[in-house]
Image (cartoon, rainbow, N blue to C red):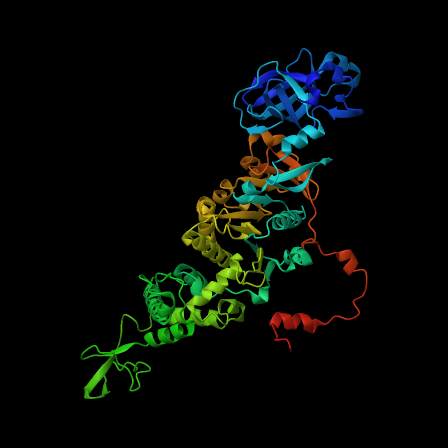
Length: 606
């Protein structure tokens, strides 16, 4: 079945759980562990003990065999325990033998006899004294390969450019995944490359990308993608405020306001928003039908300026002392000022005193101040877009956001440039968009119709391990997607340069891991903790990966693979600034106004 079945390189001499010790044939030790085999007219060299290499354990002729992964190879004395790690002088090696330390990572599917087929788990344990065999490049390619139409090529196995790395599309897109890597490890290029390949294969995809630093638009600016990608520039990004539920509204508009001191004010604000939403329902009832139950969280439009005017008015609410009737002025546009014990003329009645309403008067001072500050802060203009002054405008917003077909046209990918959103609310905005996507899929009749893939860049900033007031909402929403999203046809790709800072709940729900170079010791420890024990030999190599080299583990690959990810075409805008080039010559002309006017957001002349 395999080329080397007549030439085992060694045999199992120790088994302990998934761990094995293999004694390597002495003849190979004399040839520096090099095994030569003939394939047709060609002599091929194979090497025993390459860390991370896959080999076969058992009888290849019976389909009763396992797959192992090399962790270490060393020389030991014929009279010593194999655990010895003392260096052996070259001139005395005739008295020593070579052993390989390895782990079992899977077994052959007995139902498949004409090809190599990796099955996860153990199934049954290898036997003591089982022979071990190296695999050729073609045999590994067969082992890594996927059925026609199932996979997409994303790169090549490290050091062996003839062996391709493919991922199973449905097991990648249909499960949550994570891409981890330090700054400069090739993380952005890896993300762009994989997404480009997905979009090329699937012309009617629905991907939503949260781009915090405007890196990825450049990767989809070629003619190939131009008509299929909806690039929402920072200046064009919008999120109508009335799509927020009240908890989100409170987090953005009221911020760190003291809930205890302002409990009455918050209650009044909720009451007034609900009144305005019910008013909006009456306006659209003929178009959309009757909404049986309207709540404070219903995605219905309300006029925030009208809300502020009403709150300002209520904050001065007074009544006539004699009968508790509202003390409105003559045109009923506002409340009369309180008079205390002093009586004044009351239209149509005897003189009466105007008393402050203890349930409303002065209860909204802080809330009004906060609402004003957000409403008239230009950094928050994206919350008040023109053209979204009616509840039915949500249709166009969702169509653009989720790449829903409209007029026989459909985008494949929506990239949201979030670089201009105030940093203090960026996590909340990302959480709101994630929540909107999830709730849309939740209410969709058939989740199979429009599967949705969310891509979260720099995820440690808004779904961290340690919850803060700002990250409470996004963590709640994205953890819900992680736990329940798959059954509703919504999955997510988490990207981070600080894996140890990520929500453990979300990471634990991920089925696929792409790990690039990671240098921080805490992050390395985290990765070793979340990946299977049998990959310890490969995880020790992670700090030394070259740019674009990744360890791929999970359901999207037949077995763990260390590969070089293909370069994206075109690349993302993630290159480091060249100080040496910039500082090597005088800038003869620099237009500072160009930068300042962009900063001020001066309106450009048509």
